[in-house]
Each structure stands twice: as structure tokens, then as C-alpha cells.
Amino acid sequence: MIPVEWVEAASRRIDGQIKRTPITFDQNLDLYYKWANQQVTGSFKIRGALNKVLSLTSEERANGLVTCSAGNHGQGVAVAARQTGTGCTVYASDHAAPVKLEAMRKLGADVRLVSGGYVEAEKAAIECAADTGMTFISPYNDPEVIAGQGTIGLEIRDWTRIERDVSCLLIPVGGGGLISGVATFMRAFDRNVRIIGVQSEASPYAHQLFRTGSQDGVVEVGSIAEGLAGEIDHASITIPLMLECVDDIVLVSEDEIREAIRYAWQTHQQIIEGSAAVGLAARLAGKINLSPVLTIITGGNIQPELFNTIIRRN
Image 1 (spheres, rainbow, N blue to C red):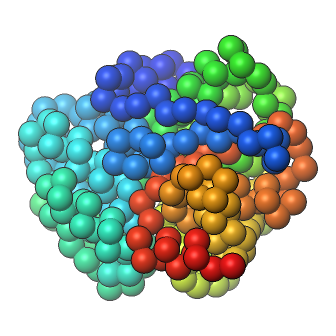
Image 2 (tube, rainbow, N blue to C red):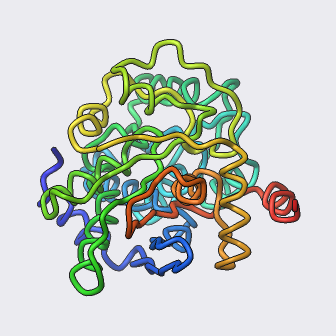
């Protein structure tokens, strides 16, 4: 478990540098949204990245930072690097969304493309850290990153004390950093709330791991939820955290994700990316029947051409 005190410390550490993003209600779906797409850099990822970098020693920061990312975590690390006056190198797949690559570069990151997917980018970043002495900032396999992501749970907890309890949280899951942080924090205050992860069936690593204990044999194909794609490090601390604190992980199709992106725009005028849409997709598809439910809309950094194609399709 990630101690509650770590999440509370993370909240204090990053206070004033992130937004407390809003929560709104969709009466048609009996669904609350935590709009993390309205966060600095357009994604929740800055929470964990900033908390990790601010917790480093001055010597660790002075060595420079290196990470791997589909785009959102890399932007968070780049912002943290700029705020602390150090350099930042991001390894990314050559299939990453151009809009995210450009955003990282504009924030000062040295972006290095790797042939392949997330796993290859992660391997290259870890090797770079070993060869150069730079400090590796994992997108998920780090307790300070997880504690930073868990501050979303703290904000949800504070909101429920004023507004309304929810029976279930729908949380996008890739490497498991967000769901681990939120789940471990929420479990300390509400043992009855159900924590359900959602992932694309195009890259069901976390789903299979949760159901069978193994990622062996997973067949991955391209996904518009690219931020959730890729195998989880077998030694990741998120694995036991998910197995202990998460109630279930469900899958949604690529078409269901597209429909959720359209719905968010047509109903709420919100631009959300594929990785952020999976919880809404599960609700729209009737895969979650509990009420009331809250889903975290994790980001809005979608390639404009892809977004326009999706919303214009009838």
C-alpha cells in the first residue's frame, strides 16, 4: 500500500503548481466526471511527475532527468525539469502522436524516438540512465509518482464529503500508476467503493494480468488509447497494488472508445483523448451497471486530425 501520508505530502508538495480540476454530473448516465483533461499540460500525469522530481535531491536533479512516455508523462517531467532548472530527455515510440511529441519539445524536452512501442522506449530510457547517470523517472513504477497520481483520489475524497458519495470509480489503466494511487488512498476512507479499471481490448495487458496473474500471450494491436498501451514491467510495484486494491478490470473496444470521444464533445463540449475515454466508454456500452459512478477523464491531448475524424462520423 502507498501510505495515505505520502499522498497528503504529495498534495502539499505540488500545491499551487497544478489545478484542482472540476467534477460535473451527467444525469443521462448517472455519471460524474473528474475532468483531468483540464489540468496543466492537458493531463493528470503532471501530478506524479512533479511530485517525483520535487522529491529528488539536488544532486539527483543535477544529473538530468530521463523518462519514457507516450506523451503525457513526458510533458509532466519536462515541466518539472524546467521548474527545477535541469535537463530532460524523453524516449518515445516512433508511433507516438505528433501533437504530444511537439508539446514535449516545446516544453524543452530532448525527445528521442525509438522504433517499436512503449516497451522499447522504456528499455531505451532505462539503458540511458544506466549509461549516463541521469535519473530515470518511471511513468508508473515509482512510489512518489504513484503518490502524486493519488492526489486525484484526495480531491475526490474531499468532494464526496461535501457533495455525494459514489459507489464506483472507473479509472483508465495502463501501467497502473493512477489506479494504484487513487485506489490505495480511497480504500483508507471508504472500503465499500468499488474500484474498476478500464483498458482497451487492443492492449489488454493489465486486464489479463489481473484475471490470470500473467501477461504471457497477450496480442497487442494499435490503439487510439495509446497512453494505456504496452506491457507492464514484471517487477512493477503497481502489480501487487492493483491485485490488492482493484475490484475488476474491464475491456472496451476501439469503436466504443470513439463513441465516448464523440459523446464527450457533443454532450459536454470537452475534447478528450482515447486513453481518457475508456471509463466513459464502459458506461455508455452498459458494462458498468452500478450507480452513481465517477470516471476520471485523464487527458485531452488527442491528435487534432484524429479528433475531427471521430466527431464528424455519424
